[in-house]
Image (tube, rainbow, N blue to C red; front, side, top):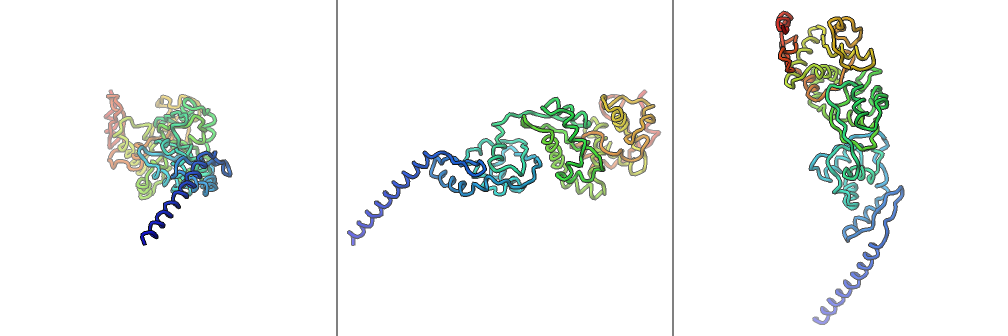
Length: 380
């Protein structure tokens, strides 16, 4: 009995040594093999460990999927990686947004290609027509040159184009040619469908600081701005507009006026409330920035916000002159920031119908219920 047991043990140990030797030789041979290109150009590098060997076999088995884009829509999409976000979370969001079909496959490719450590926080322009390796490379912020574009609140379309031209290789003419036709963007951004025919993207180019690749295009910049606005207008804000039976277009238009009028942050809801009171009561808005916009638009040149005289309120024959035309102007007059958008969507409930700049010239305003009270607050 003991002899049989001993022979069995010796046989098993010999078998393990034999197959272990074969495995070691096979692994050493694999380590000397060059990376093999897959169909379409995807390369699976040679494994450097036993674990990598298993992953490489899996990736090699699915190399066709690595080289197949998740979709056919070539539109540029803005994908934001938040600080501290894990590779697993990033992969899951890529799948949910239709940029990759299999989050696990993407994550394994990143890890095996040693690209996972290069993914950093930031905004990236991606497309559904990109393959997994292409998206993995696009997320390597540390391996690409970047530039910064800053657009302040309250600038009109021509001013935004000039700022883009100053901070990027994109010409103002190229940018304007794309931004003046909102219709071509409506399919990608459904919230633009409510804009009137022939409208531009005035009001919808969200002011912010953007990190961009040095080879950025005008289309990429506009896509980021529109996607940023779409992200900032939350479902709660959209629900509030729906409950008020107002459109986002109306809110953006009002917000653009508030942006040009308000200086002090806390006054934005009050100013929006005054304008809403005038709209509801049928009064004219009598908003100076709309007259400035109409005057500059007619001249098609700077200064874009000219000084007004008393005569201008009646002399500027423009649909944007809210002293002559009741209701909101035909569209936004500038690109408002988030606080002005919030004020326009949820204006203060106020008894005021009038406001004027305070005599202290510190940016604050004096608010009044009646025209008589308003007149009495005029500066000496």
